[in-house]
Image 1 (cartoon, helix red, strand yellow):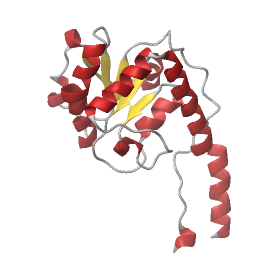
Image 2 (cartoon, helix red, strand yellow):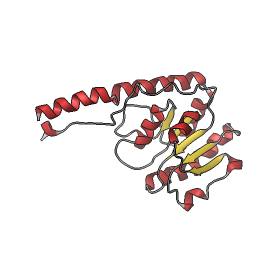
Image 3 (spheres, one colour):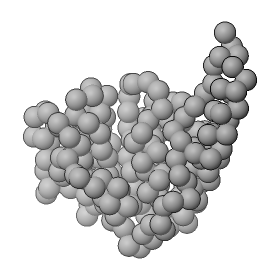
Length: 195
């Protein structure tokens, strides 16, 4: 019955994050995901084959760092530091890596539900470029499904501080308006009381 249903996304302490690094203090693109999930493996291959060559053509000194536990051989063999594609595997403190990165890339082509990796980018003050699948179930955001559009937006965020700052500010607003633990806790308790 409708009265039993309630949308409950991630509940985050949105005010607990310290101020993260500035545009000038960051470098590299980042993507991450558990290698046991086919959607993450597919996204990395999509990046390697279709998106990264376009980015690297415009930004020949840029690097993309790929993090994730249990990455299969099909992914680890893509490690090509000379081409700026670095497959670095699992990290104990992924937040630190996200905070050092300038742009987070989330090119998921299938999957369902709200995506933790999108929220991880927002929590760490890192602007992200996402496909419509990556944004599914999340807050409203602009999405880019073709390799060309995705790469173009990634390059814009990487090179244009004004656009980068706008995206970071929008991310902070999204956290407060869509994932605030205080707001959702009240709503949940109210719903439980009604039921």
